[in-house]
Image (cartoon, rainbow, N blue to C red; front, side, top):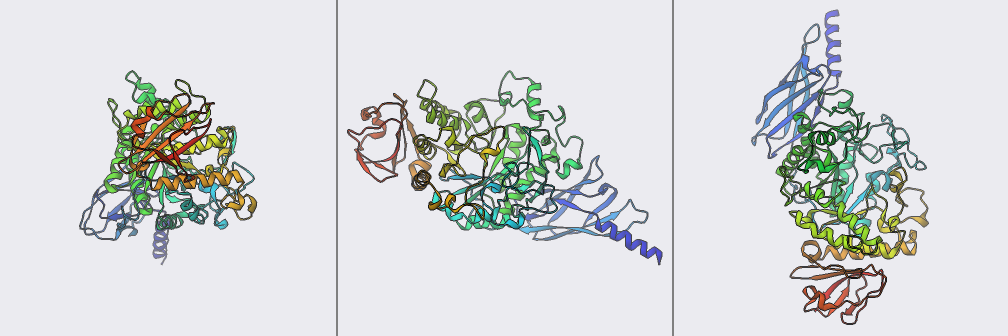
Length: 626
């Protein structure tokens, strides 16, 4: 009797052990038949793992490494495989008396038939992206503000460094707002679980409210709504005709990630220089004279000490990240990826993951984020016309250089390389890109000073910036609240440019609820209406969304360019000087020939081109009329 009781306890103890499998499930009908399972379980290498027979699926090999808590299983899933559950048996080899039993199941699901149709559609220059931080936008479900099992138990809107409670439900409550604004796509800062305590950054104790400190790739943060909430959220967006971009981080994870606490291999992370930061010099990748040491310092540096740097040259790390990106795309139906800290990642890995995603989802969009110093650097990390030994395959990037050029044009007098001349010279360097229309352009984001503060709260300058943002080639992105003139600068922290959207929380002052006309000042309402009209005009403009560009060298601070195709001709004119100017249209005949009138796309006013003047600091978008 004692013997049977002992065996029963043994079975219970073995079954109770956590058996974590990554990916958590997969799909039949994928273009790549190969799949690598990562099994994380106490002393798994001292157990025998057997896959039970499953038609269309073969186990090729099992791989054991120095950490006995990890096992990799390589599978091949051919076209004959059907949805179902693959059963695996574990034979315990490290107990006094071996006991065999079925330990876990791995599900194969049917691939979604709407891929590339109603979901995973990609984004293009026809779209208008709205970037927001979920925790700071709107709180639709206060019950998930604090999750008991998470390390951070603080939710305090009075503390700019704490979490504030925004979530998917809160964003869902305002989908009509985005449609009214002319937005087609939402880009959320990372939604993956950040089960981290507050960390020290710039001398402040900061929560991971922004989402960049991953602790489990296959879990969506429960404070936002969890996996089910995110899936419903993506479905809701698609039902409203909106698209979704997810923020990826391949470079690092939070130091409470489960594979930081229990590293699978010695070289899972880059440790050649400890946790010191990188040199941040992207030039080392294309500089023909760069030293190997400088390049290694760039790749192996840790962004900050509490974000361990992943070694993507380790094939198991690379496979984990690639499969996770594919899994997320299929699981939630996202339309695109914005890849954080792109320039800090291994170059071949970046090409490999982009290729793998495109193979499964041909319409998916990927653009990288690299805060770079030059247009050459920006172009280097995407498909380009530069003669370098390594060629990147990303189709587009966040276009920091065009951002800096527009800010210069808004704020500075026209000089040889400053003011609007900086926009002119930056766009002239589009010769470096395969297709600059794939770049994402912006005036500000969660890492920069808010643009309304950058222009010293000058509405004339801000309007000029909106005109450029929504008409210059590329995919425009607006940062949440810029449309209602939210403002602030970074002061020893990013938190000051990541404040709550007024009106997004129950109990917010209705008189300051910027989701409504009643809660906006006259100037905020004017700004909102301006963006609405221009963005919705853009949505229907073939010239802006898919046409060509013709620009002229700025003269006396006046900058004129045209977006055109065989259906439409749009002219953007800005006077950044201090004198009223009367354009001599004969100098712009390449763009104006055959046209005598122009329609203000905001007011609808039709103006005779002859004898028209533009005052200092004025800017207009006109549709030319014959």
